[in-house]
Structure formats: structure tokens, C-alpha cells
Image (tube, rainbow, N blue to C red; front, side, top):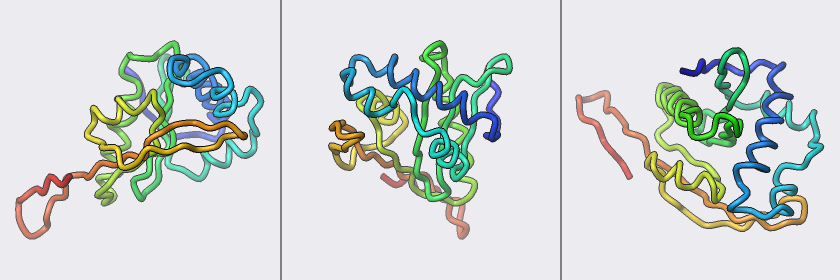
Length: 168
């Protein structure tokens, strides 16, 4: 079982390592070395990374006091980042983080979730009810990466009745 907790500023560096390691180790079959290096450079801008996390709603998965994954999202339902340490891949960390984010976003009134999924994460999001809106080619540090814009409509409970609308 993992503890899911809010982000603390001291998490920025360990989460940067999780991000880099996940891209370089878990995306090997989907992206080549040049693409992975462009996506997650070995020496990223620490201030920009800390700012990105500080400006998002971030939840951290902890196992025995150590960060093993994280999710960053916005009140409008955008899921920006979802990464798991390679040592904890396929152990339910991403699922637990995603579940927490969906619950929180539903509670604050989001009716749609959306993300830009990598070739690696597209199946994860598809299994959770997301659909591909568009395939994209994006440039990262001069290198082209393929990804998918995806979205999921959330159930909306009407305040006028007990009906639930399962959109999408």
C-alpha cells in the first residue's frame, strides 16, 4: 500500500529523478535514445521544474518514506504529469495516483479530464475511459515526439434529481 500525499517543495528534486528515470527506462520500447534525451534531458532546468510543480496540484506516492511516483494536474481537469519510479512500475502506483486525482477533480466540479499521453501512457489512460482526440507530433529540444491528446468525460450528478449522466 502506498501513501498518497500533497507535494512539498522538498519533493522537486526527487520527482525530477523519477521523471527522468521513468522516461529513460520505461519508454525504451516506444521512443529512441535521442527522443528520450530530448523529452527528459539529463540536466534539466531545476528552477523551471520546481516552478512547474509549484504551479500545479501535485500528489506524491510514497513507499516507506520515499517518493515512488507523482501526478500533477490542474483544476480544469488537465493531467500534466503522471510518472512512476521504474523500481515501482506495474505495482499500482500510477493507478492509485490517478484515482486520487480523479476523485479530487470530480469533487471540485471538473466534468472532463484531458491529457497529452505518450505512446507508453496511452494504454493506461485508455483503460481508464479516456479516448484519443488527436494524434500529435511535438518538438522537444528540436526532436519530434509522437503523442496523443486524450480526454474523458466524468459522470455528472444533477442537483435536480438522483440521475447520473454518463457522458462520452
